[in-house]
Amino acid sequence: MATAQELLKQAQEFHQQGQMQTALELYRSAVKANPRHADAHTGLGMALTQAGLDAEAIEHLERAIKLEPTSAQSLCNLAFAHRAQGRLDIALQCYEKAACMNKQFPRAVAGAADIHAMQGDYGKAYTLLLPYIQSGQDSPPIAVTYARCCRFLGKAQDAGQALARHLSGAAGSELTPATRVSMLLEMGIISELIGHPDRGFAAATDANRMVGRRFNAAAHTEAADTVLNTWTPEVHNALPKASAESELPVLIVGMPRCGAGLVEQIIASHPEAAPAGETALTRHIMQRLEGEMKPGFDAFTMHEALAFQAVNEASGFYLKNLQQIALRDGYEKPQRITDRCTHNYLYLGALDCLLPKGRVIHVRRNPLDTAISCYMTAFTIPYLFKTHLQDFAAAYQAYEKLMAHWKSIISMQVLEVDYEDIVSDTEAQSRRIIDFLGLEWDDACLRFWETPRRTVAFANQGTLKPIYDTSAGRHKHYEQFLAPLRAALGMPAAEGITPLPPQGSLQPPTDTPPIA
Image (cartoon, rainbow, N blue to C red; front, side, top):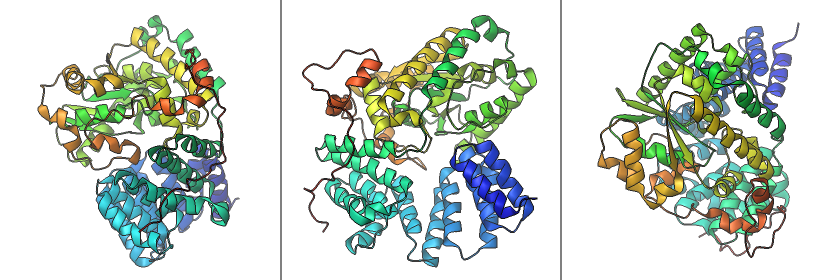
């Protein structure tokens, strides 16, 4: 019989490969083999957090702390889980306690600064990190968080130098792959801000090529085609619908970085609406229906799994957890709750059965802008198609086919909104959105940046500012690299542009002044 340590090692290997169902089973077996094995509880807790099983995750991470009460690492793991669930105040307490335990533990300092930044207090985060930067005692996590804060405080050049110090020379060779990816992607954004988009693209290319797994475009396309060929109107109309006809859910769908965060923030500013953010609820439901936890994101094809009991159980699970998320964030009786998991377009056939009175807002954006934004962004959700522009094209084409198909057969109401229209005429589009939700207009929706949120990811911090138009047409800075993407999407070549291949081998900006 395998020991707890042997089971833990196997679980970690499957976890790293993205085979979550097997990893969870092995983690549970390790805990059962030795209930006092702190690392087994930690591994299980972190995997459960990733799977969106919040309550059980916290239970095991707290157990790890009881077994190792002086471990700053364990406290940071618990902080990470609370942060992922939106409990920022508790997460901050855990990080601060870990920092007191071990003043040389950079993850705790960077984590606390991250929380301040996510709450919009960049100045406090910057002040917390600056002494480490100035003394040269900053670790990679501290440098990344410092760079992000600098970006929002208008100090992009300072950020570039802090990152370059870690990326170059001997220090760069000692970085873990995940840390190097984070730093390179941040360097990519910084380079664009200081007027070097070519260096930014090189940094992002280096980062994306370090991702271990490649998007399976063939399998993704095959799943989409299976939906188109087998999920016919006749099949869909014969499927059972959930008995609960709640109008609470508002599914905001589209490609990642399409502007869904902005739409959610506009809705969240209405006094009768609540934001749930990017939940893992639907993916968990689909994986349960499929009987496995897949590492990738493909269309749900198993309409035969949608029996009456399964549909009602899944509907109840979703609605209960959606309301719990809203209640946790202080929304007691909202009339609408948004779910900003944009890849829900993969599941709309099934979700139409689970949530027949729900609403869908489909946010569209220029595909070239969307591709560049994905290419330059670090996602917490593993969207593997973002690492190669050709893979993005395959995913985008599957998305367009699926959305056209679902719109033709589902009973849920669907509103299509273009990001560029929101930027050019915010009030008209905001009124369209609120009217679609069946709510009375409220002027607070035009001051969406004033609406407090418990947690906003760095990639969506722009939703806490008034409308700006710099993201519309962003791809024009990178046009020389986009010829293959244009061709794959069936778009004409850009005029007057000499195409270049994606080039890595980042050369960090050298024209950044020293940090004061």
